[in-house]
Image (cartoon, rainbow, N blue to C red):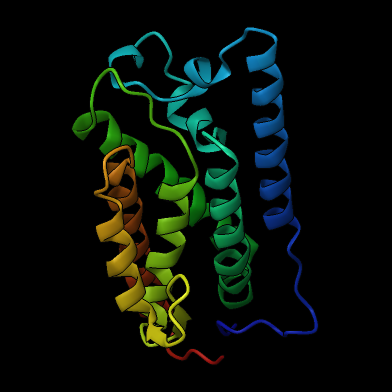
Length: 196
């Protein structure tokens, strides 16, 4: 079994499922706000409320704070996720995604503001990117509108630095990235060759 799946035969079922669920929950959240129900507070992760709302360690992965937030996350998820699925398969993709998202939330729980809600799929996406950094560190990627490609590892450092802008849960990004890097090392030791 090699890392590279046949480009003509692989599925993105789990990836499209995640993207669809995220958008549906985002729409439900908007409808809830119009109806006077704050679903972000119910399903987002606030460390101070975790004991009474333990489900938020998972549900917060599907909550987004605005159109730009979900659009950026889902576009990133599509491109990074489809590449991970091609390289490792859907099972590994899902394992890294959810493990990275939950570890990111654990980091946020212990290092974040206890009364501030954290939410979004960014920690899970950083985990997927972390795997790629180990497997394909020199993969050329573009950063925003700069008309020059950078190695993936440089882009990840730039986005990690942007995580420290106030209002962004850098803790979740860092936790997800650490999980992804460790998973990437595990995959790299397990397999010998990568082709893309």
